[in-house]
Amino acid sequence: MKFFVDSAELPEIQKLNAMGLVDGVTTNPSLIYKSGRDFLEVIRDIAAVVPGPISAEVTAEDHPTMMREAEKLVTLGKNIVIKVPLTVDGLMTCRRLRQDHIPVNVTLCFSLNQALLAAKAGASYISPFVGRLDDQGQDGMGLIQDIRDMYDNYGFETEILAASIRHTDHVRRASLIGADVVTCPPSIFYQLFTHSLTEKGLAAFRDDWAKTGQRVV
Ligand code: E4P
Image 1 (cartoon, rainbow, N blue to C red):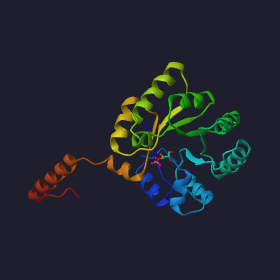
Image 2 (image 1 turned 60 degrees about the vertical axis):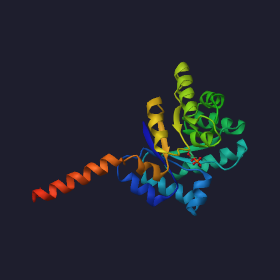
Image 3 (image 1 turned 90 degrees about the horizontal axis):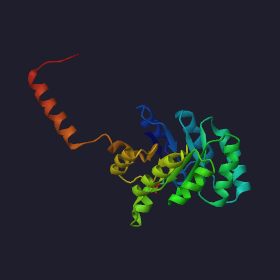
Image 4 (image 1 turned 90 degrees about the vertical axis):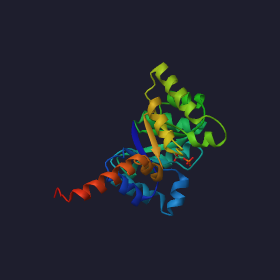
């Protein structure tokens, strides 16, 4: 399973990328707003730091303008993935971009039928928003499982990118289901490393080692 970082904060992305565990980055207009930075500049900067796929989302809602935006966004780096919303115009844009072999991430997916349409439009990635479904009492991870089953039924190559991740159990369950990618906010990325028994065990080893009075280096 690939790990993407769901952020537009360059310092955070750089820090995580230095660990060698970041396969790509996802952004959206809300994350760009939070960063307080210029959209095109921040995408260019991220694409220069992380060699993997960087999702940059179109902001227009009509197909012709989405295409114009996409044409500009792809110039920001060799690894840009155009993110389009799951709408009629979004999927028209997806199909058109895929004809030109431009990778596309279809976002704001909340149902199996939407995921089916995105795959038929040739999406490189489908982004089901797990947390936002959970927030309204629906089963976000159930949707990931359903999409996995349906894509496997037909051999669709669209990668399932589990998004709107709220806690580490979403990551655990996505990995068991076989999601291709999980995109995590930096805070959740760090939580994946932690376990109380790891901390407790490390403290015990530290104490006992100190008692030996030895040094390795
Ligand atoms: C995915 O690409 C989106 O940027 C993101 O996961 C949305 O998550 P949110 O529901 O926490 O805003």
